[in-house]
Length: 521
Image (tube, one colour):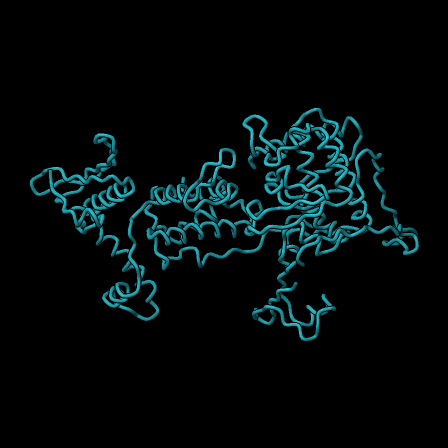
């Protein structure tokens, strides 16, 4: 068997061979009680096998990958070492970077060796993805088992696997990571994802970029290769349905909650709690799934810890006055023993126990809606199509009118003024907004209000014939720090929106074109 110097082994360098093994693989073996990993790298000049052994599996995999790359180079008739192959990529990266300066290859090499760290491993996309899955694996909330060394949230991990990166890897996984070009990413975004709206393609691009940046940090990709940087998207096609409000009508909300209360199924009661929290507090679906009995205070508030929130910032949610009776009704269906366990999740996976996954809630919600529609038809109750995110949109739109912008933003965990109006604001009347926050259980449903028609051929109704609701909704005031918002506009528009700001107000800002970004508190 060929020999390997200790120095080469310690540095993880590929042993020199006359030819390399194109079928190199990592094989574990035991020596007494310890497990080692061996790689058949290739053959020396005496045609003897050259093997590499180590107790570190990752080190063995790295050597295997280098051996495979070297064998591939031989197939191309290229006798470069793996280090040479990696260097050729790095030189190309440097040339691209210095192209505008008219740099020659020697100049690019000199620049690179002086200023740029070399890629340490030459991995396929599939191998890089497996590393990401291992590093970013979430902690297990059911068992308490620790996840990867860079654990992320379960929802982020799942979305990367099922929506953003997983499907991409299935198609391009066998390609070398550093060989993926702008054209490959364009093929993915514009052909494989042709039915995805441009506004959603942006999120795909963001996740792909985040993955490549992570690979660059781990030294198996180059930060100078930015194949996604120049990819741009047009505007979304016009969707006729988006011309009209997509929020839920108050009486539709009442019928949803009434059905959940009348149900005999425990999972429907949990869905009723999930709906109540989302409809009247505006929080995200997976945030509602992470609420424990001990997080709901007896004063009608929810202390939402940072580790359970999307943006990693804790917040204090005041449950509106009308929502408390709904929760009381649903909570009464659970035993005192269940409610006494402050560490138990309110909404649970009844089969496996513990927290319910987002996918599990999606299936539960789909089944609930089907049964609810049947119930509405049998009981002549109001219904409508429930579009994605309708609950959060409804709270944002009605809340802006009934409880004010600051309380609405606080409950939703939203700080950016522009994001709210671009994503969550829908047209709503003051009458419906007030009706929405007066919905309570055990009340008779209100007959659908028929819109009056203008008389004498006019289009608009006369002012004095309009219905005026004189009642007001008491605002809930939370005892916490004031809300911060980020607003981009010119100074005059800002002062017009917030007339009570002092004349010498500057805030924390930076110029953005002709406008300024202000941090308002």
